Amino acid sequence: MNSNHMMDSDDKAVVLKTGKGSVIKDILTSAHMAVSVYTKIPMPYIDMTGSSPRFLFCFFPLVGLIMGVIVWLWNCLYALTGADMRLLWAAVTAALPIFITGGIHMDGYMDCMDAYSSYRDRDKRLEILKDSHVGAFAVLWTVIYMLIYTAVIYHMPDERIILLGVVYTTERILLGFCLMGSSMARQKGMLASVMQDTARGATTVILLVELMICAAYVVYYASLFKQGAGYDAGPDVLWIVTLYAVMASVGAIGVYKAHKTLGGMTGDTCGCVIQMMEIAGILVLTL
Image 1 (cartoon, rainbow, N blue to C red):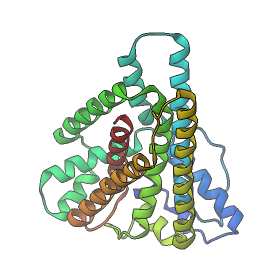
Image 2 (cartoon, rainbow, N blue to C red):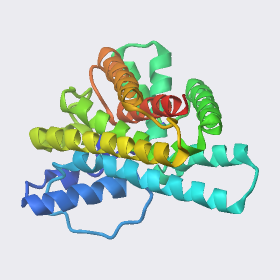
Image 3 (tube, helix red, strand yellow):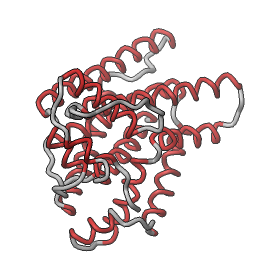
Image 4 (cartoon, rainbow, N blue to C red):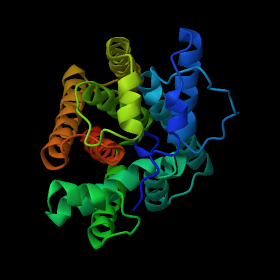
């Protein structure tokens, strides 16, 4: 399949050929690009001339927050209907992230499954990533992924559904951390261009703050849930540490795999790492 990732597409490189503008304009440009590229939410046109998406990865977690809100609204709607169709609810919940993002990360996952399963040399694998055809391994591993995802959602405790937004947000924060220290498999393309412009120091600090906010939210929600339930039923600090550790470990493995087999990261491997951290996160949520 041919990836349309903003980070791995050359047809939009004109946006990145402009110089750095004011900090405010660069922030607005970064926020706009994060939402318009990584979701299907319609965004108004803004003139990006003279600006740079150097803070793009600071706003990447915003996509996860939007996803979490939409999934929570869907859960509220389902609860209001009083319907007893949990399997259908679980299937829709599993599919919503794909609908919201337009499948941009799942596309990367499928491309990587084809490339990694080919056991060819680096150049051939990079060629497979840009191939517009869907391979058998991509279909096979995507079916397996969605079956596991739906099954995990089906068994997830109701009080933890609201924490899916934390998973969607955290995986994007962790990917941002990984990219700050990663090399690129291709020296041309949008990911390489974005990383050249990225304000790495400021981005790292902001991502760390965002990660701490996510942890604080889980702690706050857990305290509210325990008070309302009247017993110690909510997530605790060890559970939060486990969630972060598992997602970070899976992300690190995905990045290591990309560097070992492809020589670095691409837009497709970013999507693959996102999907793998996501399913790992929801597994921890269900335990």
